[in-house]
Length: 64
Ligand SMILES: [Zn+2]
Image 1 (cartoon, protein in one colour):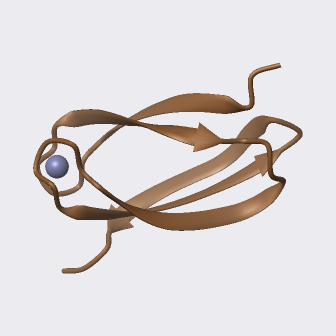
Image 2 (image 1 turned 60 degrees about the horizontal axis):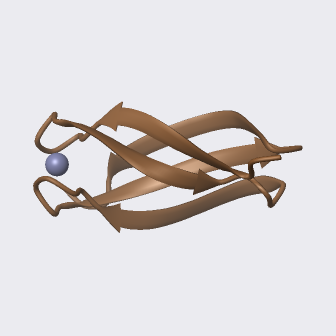
């Protein structure tokens, strides 16, 4: 079973549609910062996984 899922969303900085690969193999909430592939600004990703399913997903600017 796939433990990785590609999540599409709009970058909060440049509003371009981008995607990131989420690792769902660890249960619970995780957060990390990743640079937008278009504008290179840091995006804070917070998501929660349970039994290889994505329960919640949130992204925001890592700084203002
Ligand atoms: Zn961007």
